Length: 286
Image 1 (tube, rainbow, N blue to C red):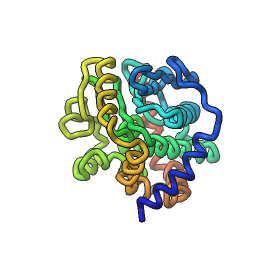
Image 2 (image 1 turned 180 degrees about the vertical axis):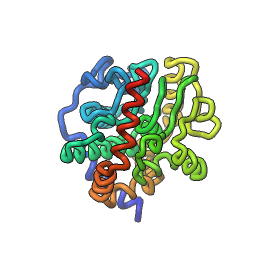
Image 3 (image 1 turned 90 degrees about the vertical axis):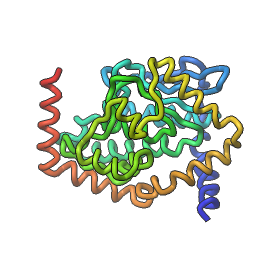
């Protein structure tokens, strides 16, 4: 039953995603905030976030990421590696300024695009891997867990530290984290607002490998993508989506409800006061 449903969904989704005229994915193709480079030999596309200073997930960056993911998938690349052009930060997470004393309609748009980004990456039909070449807190970590494989450089941190600034993550975000880590570790880490060092992340299984350089990380991600060479691409996509069905059901069955709950919570004094203190703390560190 689930398999038939997924086949039907695939027939509906793919023509929509791929019906528009797509740019050629040649080396250096870019949209400004993201850059796509395709290896001519392997057919693997590297998608780099390119929004200084720390790849904060703004509305524009999230739009560009979704567009780039869809283009890479529809152009039949053999795989997608997500990384950063910044050598210190993979992504600092959501643009918190959008959550502080927000315009209500813009906040709704912002959260909806974040939902869309996670779905695009989590359900991407081709193999995905993250070359984490910098810090990956909060939504940066969630993007990494949406990928199938994670390689990280030493001396950085990764994790969802939302409770530190009074935020309560959505259930689907928790499930994305939990799809990589055991529930016991996720529960404790989320409650603590823990950021794992590279070595700690490797020990608990949040990342799969450690690399000595970005070049090495990209090579390890490419090697992982190469392990699917003998699999039929369509069968692999359907199998991946069956494996991940329970992760996305929580969001897909009531996206509007998730949006309402998020907007309601963001507007509470508890969150606004906590976020204000957090933003002030970030200013002092600069």
